[in-house]
Length: 308
Length: 291
Image (cartoon, rainbow over all chains, first blue to last red; front, side):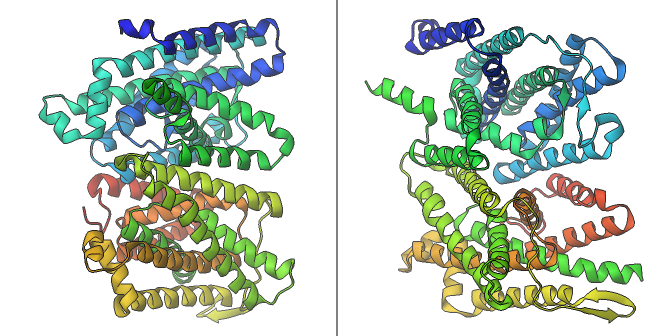
């Protein structure tokens, strides 16, 4: 840990965060709004990377965790008018419960079978939202009466601060002894178990941590948007974006996932003039990265540093 | 009468599901690849058949053939541009190739989907059916196209069975799914077998796509749901088991039809999803899967 604080990665991250924190002083609200969403997305991707990169679980349903957190927070605020902060906290807790439910099959089935189970979880949540339209707002979306703040700068700072703290905790966790055990149990569960580590406990913990941050981020996003809809927090396409971000930025790096998410959102916005082709170009770039730089952005950078 | 109607309607959709899922499970069985661009290939075939008829003004049969041809080309492109580079890559560790193939084919599928949406818009397209009209089966008015779809699906699956079990190439494919190393030791080129399998897959997905285009119509939005339904049918039946997929396709097809008729079309997919979760818990390897 000590040599991390003197490493180049730490200084680069610190500089990035400081520069990012001064952005509201001189850029437009439009860019701030874009980055706010990108930062929340970054947390989704980092939480996913903890599960995939370290615990080795291919979770096709990150939006199951995100959506549960987002909709719980939204519904509580919409139905009972509870304070925003209580709702966000309860949303994150609901997501932890969802993470627990998702972890149960993971302890029984592996690989593609687990991937499908998580995908089914998302489809079920999506059906739930549509069927119980009275409660959830259905396909139109749920209106949320309260927001954290309407100031673009303040929203931006909240998102940046939240992402920085989440990144610090998740990265710290991934580099800690717990993270190493997790990585070992992801790569070779039998051997890790034979070394005397409790794999079930570690994997469960990974699911709970991942769910907590996904849910918290989802709830915050909902209170930023002022609405929760299937298209923004539940749809499989959103989950695909999360996965692509993490793979693009570099799996098993945690920080790279956030980088990938920011790239994905900003690139999508810059390509907006190309209309329908925007998604095509972003997917093509992502595919090229997957084929030629399988380590992702950060993976490529880190391996160069390690070599020199 | 409702029971008979469900029986007839369910059969066509189930046969279509079976045809779509067979190719998917064949690829997995032989080369261990889960092709998440499956839905995109089916939609590409249907849209190509539609475009051939309404843009190029070809006749129905040529259009359908054109659709299948496009699916074949896209299938080979998937193998050579996405799957093969990942499988041969030295920079990707072997245990992670699976997730890279999944991510790669997923992105490839999105690219195809977006191209279709760009050139042919998101609107739903219905391919003109080869046979038209309605027949009366014990008081149920059934479009001839339903019967035609079911017949073609059964015929193609039957031909596939003959190909796999009765020809030399087919036996090589079967052997590769059992033991790739053994096949190489017998002097057969594994890459050639993969190319054959991707070819078979392209034709199957193409026929399924064109038939789907005639039966229900497709749009670029159908890509995701089509992949998801093929994936769940294949997992339900047991990954790599063709007969398991056939059974699972009929289970899912009839479950959906019954739900749509008896409860509400809005809940169509829910019981099948519940069944899938249930089977995952009781029998994680699927109905006929091996571990």
